[in-house]
Image (cartoon, rainbow, N blue to C red; front, side, top):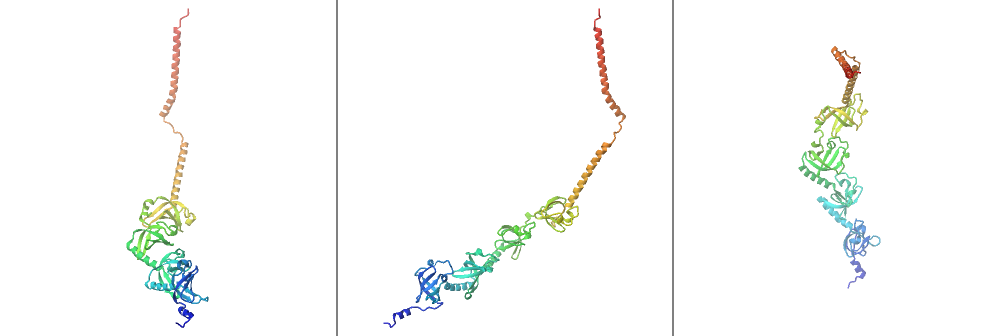
Length: 426
């Protein structure tokens, strides 16, 4: 029979543990805030919720059950109350560090969920590990607000793994750049100058718009947005708009776009519409010291030189004109080759003045003719004419006298007849 006492045999049966040691235990109790394990030591091990997982919302009672076996790491043999403090997540983190080192060496693409949006970037959960992606490495373009990535599953590669400094750095930008480069190459192989394409407005600047063509971005310069003058691209487009564009040029990986198509070129029939001598109406688009540019239609401006604004002397266009004002002028020059049209209000005023003067002269001539006609004396008539007029005037009187004489003769004859037929008195 052994000479050892029961206490000594019990002491020999209890394992000896040290800080940092990995041990296996059996769950003997589960609470909302901690898990109690029998690790074969004289004191039970305590695994707090915070040392079980980085997820503060995790439900321990749903994760483990009494009797479950767990492999844990000793944080502190005696916490001051005679309990052994354990950690599960740090042991998992150690395993994750090895996983991260392998992924880093192999340039492996990992997928994790954004656990938190921080001031300087994103904290991404991968297993029980945490990867930090700086804001500059989240996308290939600057993004001021990263909140849209919250709770999203994103892909990344690792650019730094230093477990001792707890620095696990991820890079999402690299994947985006590589994918775009691949798509860009595929696009460049199938497109050519002159091809029409549908794209999406991706970004707007003062000098133009970047259009996503589905694999590469093309630049629609402000001068290629319209045949007319464009002062601000943001007044025409907004990010997300669908547009139809034509490929104007391709230089290496740069794609130049245009919306100025031949079918909507206002100069196509300009020679017919804007012939020299034609009166036109337009609006003052802008002014300089030497004249005003008049918009005849979208894409066609004409110059109204300061010397052609009025018959009167004009020092500068802004003295008599204002932007947006509608004017009527005559086309005095048209050059289709240089796409230049010259206008003149002065010519219109001169013609109007001449017309008014001509009308006044005509009215004056008519008045003088009337006055002259009234003042002119009657001309002497020829003798034959006078005789004929006298005869015409005398003829009615002779007729009346003959008729009177005839009536008197008839009356005398009647009286003689009556006297002859009357019987003589006895």
